[in-house]
Length: 516
Image 1 (cartoon, rainbow, N blue to C red):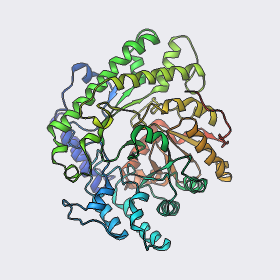
Image 2 (tube, helix red, strand yellow):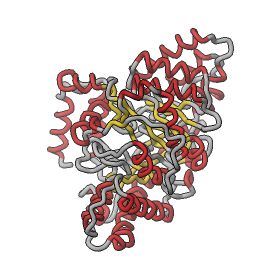
Image 3 (cartoon, rainbow, N blue to C red):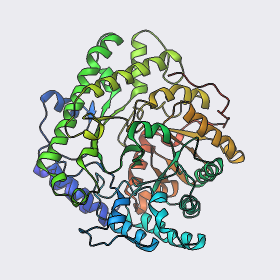
Image 4 (cartoon, one colour):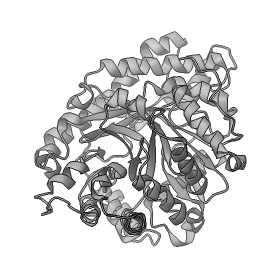
């Protein structure tokens, strides 16, 4: 960015009446970072980035903090913190106060924590002698504080898989307060999560679009028991995180390909996967070797995070458009999500990417055996005419079972997160048990992570996060307290995520399992 361009951009932020003070500070910090040269890459990589075939998610030119950090909050509560001058927490009040203090000091790409811990498990040791009414009162104050103190929806807590007093109270508070922050995932285990708890969660989704639902056994199989969903729905190891997230636009790789589908899989796709990996490696080395985050962070010194539990996230998006373009070139008319031939091609593409990513060493990624995690990236507000991750394009989704049949085979390959958003019509409210059956059936079919939305409440699920329709309506005149509202407005305008095809709810418990 040239000096005059930088000055104009700074002036635009300073004089923008729609931004809060905190939003201005964050954007000004980003502009300062853009004044530096980015980590070095080859000319081919630089050109692919400039053309947005690969995308650095606008993380900034000088990585000085990991994209996602997942501190071990249980350890922090148990041992206290020398850096923050906190003794070990002994009571529920102390645990809640300690957590709010810790959150104020945890970095990420957003400037605040994307992970709040597994709050039901974190608070369980402090519930002795605390009655249900007192737990509700204290958690209510804590829950309001989270929404007012943390500036947007990329903040995530996890509940389950076991039923708990804290989990039930959180769901009750969500239905009453209707807040944007925090985002929530409920881990679901067929052997441990009771239907009654799932019903409570489903009714909460009817009110506010939360929680997300996570296939706990699949996650444990890939990441171990100490994992969490953070930010949108990105799954990583607790005590670690992700240095960076770089994504590959599969649609754009096809547009730059000449030849057969076989040639695409054998030559073009590996070329762009390697350019994506090159950009990731350059950013990781800068963060670790030059910025030295893991050398000076108090989180590392106090054992709350460890470099050997970090990896990086290799994201893909635009699969639907890539499949359709390749099919057209072969003279076909099949469409992803609607035809077995197109779906089978999609599996070949994703399996090829997974194979290449697994074979490519990545420095400082011991959290995944020296390799990046594969991630189905959910899109950003500037995406136009390209579908998030491995999803079926908005507004073209098939009926429920066909939808799950098409996308489920992808989920096993995305240990760092893959999600589908289903839109249900309001008949779901009349039969919440059928929704529970859908959740259990979807996970039995191989889904890793998904959620649903109803058009009748005040929330729109953008990707893994939510915005309120009332906040979007007020945005032009009043701005927004949550920075994610600006991004949500862009996604509604560009990707029309408010136009997902609503589905009637049917039970999947007796349905055959999808292949793959």
